[in-house]
Amino acid sequence: KIIICGLKDIQEAVDKYKADMMLTIINKNFSPETPIGLDPKKHLRVLIDDISEPREGFILPKKQDVEKLLNFTDNWDQEKPIIIHCHMGISRSTATSLGVICKYDKPNLPINVEKMKEIAPHASPNKLMTKYADEILGLDNQLFRTLEYFDPQPIDESKIVEFTF
Image (cartoon, rainbow, N blue to C red; front, side, top):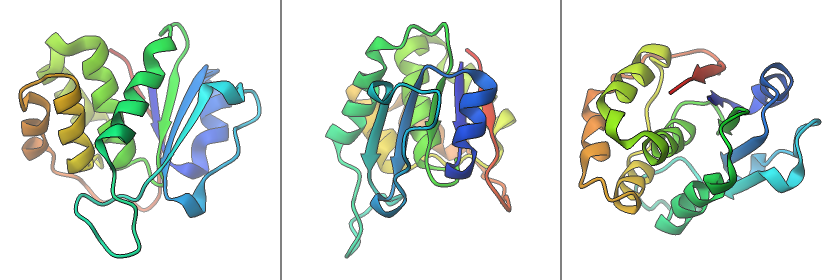
């Protein structure tokens, strides 16, 4: 189970779902402490901005950032949920979640993309991160091409999304 959320929801998500691991993908100015109840060794922070093209003063995601995120889940036993969050739970976290889902359930990519759109209508996966995940996982653009099917709906505040696959 993957729990996708925004920054303000991480402690609630750890408490409610008894998560064992957490991926933080966020701007360096907003990097949170490890929530109470989570082992700091099972919390990875990747400090990047939510951009897909270079911009002055912003940190562009790199392929090694996505590789680091995907590799960190090698030790995830899937018995307990993993929390994947960014600032709002919309772009970096959904891109990372799709990568993790494909890593563990490649054959069901179309079904899982449909499920993501249904349970997270606000999802707008970061294009560059999705492209890198596709390359790393050897998906031959199958994951990247799914981005055209996302039609993100606006939300006022982040929400916790529970994804089971």
